[in-house]
Image 1 (cartoon, rainbow, N blue to C red):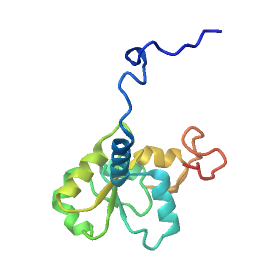
Image 2 (tube, helix red, strand yellow):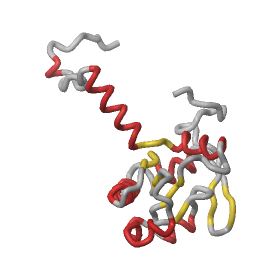
Image 3 (tube, rainbow, N blue to C red):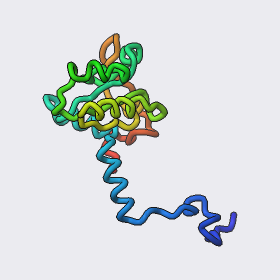
Image 4 (cartoon, rainbow, N blue to C red):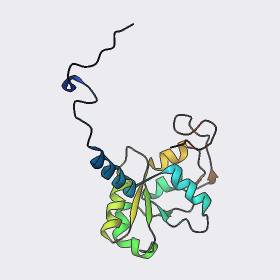
Length: 165
């Protein structure tokens, strides 16, 4: 069994070589992060709890081909490149917007959120995008109609209950 020892200095430590931020700075950072982001579970829970009016609109910023492959039910299709010319016609500036794109490896939702914010919309990015929406087992729509896949046990609670976070 390998011996475990405390590193001689934080310079040798893979996690602590850069010290954690002071608690007040960390709190400010994480508070700000939550002002800019929502996760798929929270978006799905809000849509389920308040189906008539969740208090926000979901915007899919992907191409038409991607939209047809699958999208969040009730989402507005507004590709990022079309935000400047179509946002005012499709969205109410008094209603917060939650944008999404493909997944965590894509910054399309962030670019769409930036374009909407520059037009005066309150906006959050949905972390995980459509990929995690599907991986967590939430219903989605395709050009063929409603669809749903089993939840991936690596991204969603195995028993389908709240993850507790």
